[in-house]
Amino acid sequence: AGNKMERSSFLFGLAETPSGGDIFFNELLFNPIPGDPDYIELYNCSDKIIDASKLHLVYVSDATADTSVLVPVSQERRCIMPGTYYSVTSDRQKTINRYTSSVPENLFRISSLPSMPDDEGTLILFNSELDVIDKVSYSEKMHYPLLSGFEGIALEKTGRCNLSEEAANWHSATEISGWGTPGGPNSVFVELFSQTDKVSLSSTKITPDNDGYEDLLSISMFLNGNGNAVSVSVFDETGCFVKKIATNMLTGAEATFVWDGTADDGSPVDSGIYIILINLFDENGKTEGWKKVCTVLR
Image (tube, rainbow, N blue to C red):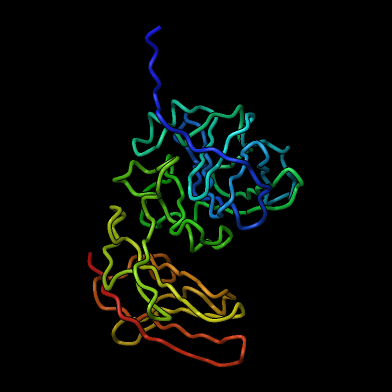
């Protein structure tokens, strides 16, 4: 009949039951432009093939603790392959039209999403046995504080497999990406290049103007054991306190902290040299400290 295949290859396989830490929330649009739908993006951090129809979403009200009904991530059996993105929305075409950096083949329509208020809320991802796979509490306060408004701007993870419940692991999508990347790599993702040191920075400078290039400083730690308490603070070159990024945060062998170039009160810091002070108290009772330097350019 002359019909042609739109795609020449597909990846699929036998699905396994997901458990905690296999799938993470990766991007959220909870305050869309009026008339547009919300969307939720997941990322498969495991080496498992996961059936999307075996995953369920639920919203929990922070004020009343009431929960919504379970919403299946997919009505059809679809494979979420290892290391891939999977986004859902109630109006696929509107989302594709609005967000030019979207990847349509990773964006799927479902009849409805859980209720997602515009200011704050909590989402939980369950498997079919109702085991909690991931959980995130979102708020408009997690957006970049210098934005004039938050409508139509998605929250993205700064690292694909960072813990969803840590607010510091989220940041506003960039303007150059179109304010969201449903189905595709995050616009604020910080790539890590070196694991030769216990502590490393993603760069020696940042330009926090939300243009998608060197907006964030990623502080990565590669440690021993799973009982490490880490504190991270920022000081200016005169030694004055600027911001507390983490206080005795319990981490595993690897941890990532992000600084967006703001002070403790949310105001932007001036251009200049800043000192990142990292203190570690490990599971053996030993302490260790590092000082790293980063330049902010505006």
